[in-house]
Length: 258
Image 1: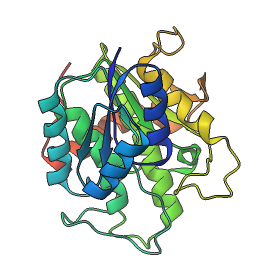
Image 2: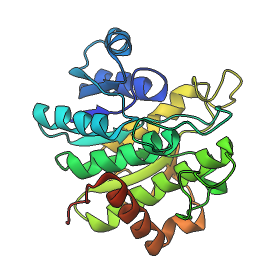
Image 3: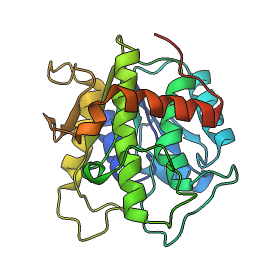
Image 4: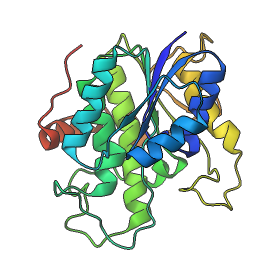
């Protein structure tokens, strides 16, 4: 049995992955952004070990989530599922002055990775849209450019792959991977999304706990339990390190050494 934390698991893919893992006998901790969503998640994933509450649009709440997780003990796996989409017509700024999309999709998984007790496995949720993303750090939070939601989202999902691969290099004893779930009919994906929702949640659960040799790898990218090529920039070490350094500077939290 493994202890697994899944961020952003009040609904959608995170909740489906939680339900799958609970059915398999694992101890799953959910995460929701407010108490109302936490209660709904707890009812939908009966048997969950706990539900942690934090609105991770702010750095203080990112820290709070990490502290709550650490107080409960070490997790064998963390699935970084939390994210927001690109439907907003303009750039949304958080209380810290960050781009909300960047703060939730990129900075949150970085901060939790840096502050939580180190697990055996890390799983980062990306998207097929990462292939259209830019890894440039000249304006990653869109403070200088005219807002383009789909492009900002694509950038954030490429950053998630860079994060997974950068951590895999720096922490060789941790299995750190990224995946795309497909275009599935979640609240973010919309009701017309053509891919299978159940299959969309399968790979993150598999990477988190499976003893299958194909899942016990690191620095890889998956779709439906199969390796899939990434955008070429995701493999560039200088871009991985640049993102880790940018997030460390932004948050004031350095990624611990191996």
